[in-house]
Each structure stands twice: as C-alpha cells, then as structure tokens.
Image (tube, rainbow, N blue to C red; front, side, top):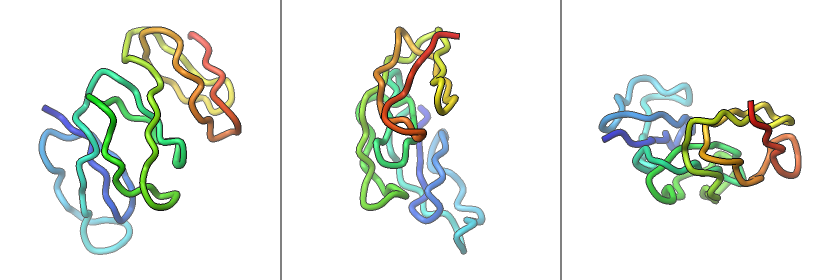
Length: 114
C-alpha cells in the first residue's frame, strides 16, 4: 500500500509504494524520507504549512517547514465531488463540503463546489 513520505531536509511530500529513492535532494546530498501516513480516505491539512494529504488516520507530525512539527487537522472524507477554495484555489475531491481549515491566503478556506 502507498504511503506519504516527507523529506526532512527539503520538506517535499510524495506518495510512494515503499520508501522513495533517496536520489539528489535540492538541500544537499540525498533525501532523508520519513513516513507521514498511509494514503487513505480522509484529507488532513497542516495548520502551519498548509500542506494537504489524504491519509488513513491522522498523519505523523514529522518535520514541518514552518517550524517544529506538523499540526494536522481533518478537512473532509475523500470523495468524488470537486471543491475549490475561492481564495487559494486549492482543489480537493471530497464527499461533502470540506471543513474550513486554514487558508494560506488568510483566515479559513472558502470552499465552493465545482
């Protein structure tokens, strides 16, 4: 099963079946991947760096680029309806209107069905 991994040096997050290749990290040398969560049926957003991932349970706190560790909040169940925030233009496919969360453009998301 796929999991979301984050490099603790460059903070990139990618889904992979097994630990990603360490390759070349833009922050020097090779990536240092840490598993955040298995890919799943619920969207979570970090209230600090605004990353959104679909996970099977609350993701590990990992290394947030905005300092210390991630602070994950549940947004919505993964679904088939497209919702886009009118402010930051982030789009997710959810089963019902997502929670307002934390919009990088200020305050909370303003989700609209597409």
